[in-house]
Length: 249
Ligand code: PEP
Image (tube, rainbow, N blue to C red):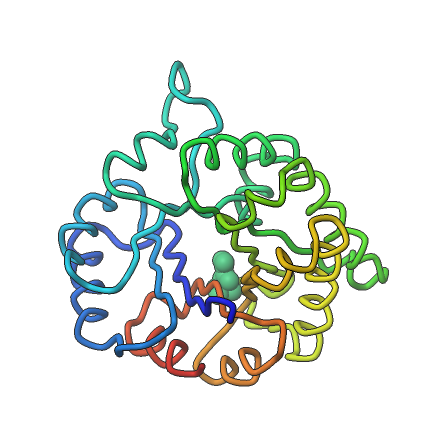
């Protein structure tokens, strides 16, 4: 049985008191469930998020990290710094990091190695842009993103990797991939991983969908055979919506 996961990426939202309020709402509302629930507050609120969530079944994860261990990288945060506040999981490769902060596949391959060397689990994001899909190149774009950033790994590393397919045209736009489009791509991703790393790795791998998932569309997306959960942006900022998405499984 693959792990089911619903992860909330709060991006650059929520100051300290808003973070505490949202976490307290989640403590009240998140049900006892076999779904792994994760939230990714901004770096400055990670420490307090762990304090608020102590003893609760919601994992605090980070939105990003730097590929180097330490040094003169003003404004950056390292894997060991994340670990020192209790983080076990980090999101890497989000399309906003790729588009606004110049994160290439090559940089992401290094980040992946650093995260794994520090025993962090990774939620690795990737997905095609609208022009790629219109041109019919979406499968090759996704395949290359996976190859460039992850194909140097060994099969054993994959127990610490969760994939998040996020078509860029569906992120924050209100436009969602149809459940069929999501399933078609997730099946392709699983096949690609299986061909390179073996059927066992592919069978165990959780592949999340991200892109305007809401309470209204979550159930039909999560019902698809190769969709193992969601990475949720906008709808993770309201406890009621996030909980409704968790309950959509
Ligand atoms: C995201 O940023 O990972 C995301 C899926 O955002 P949204 O749900 O707002 O489209």
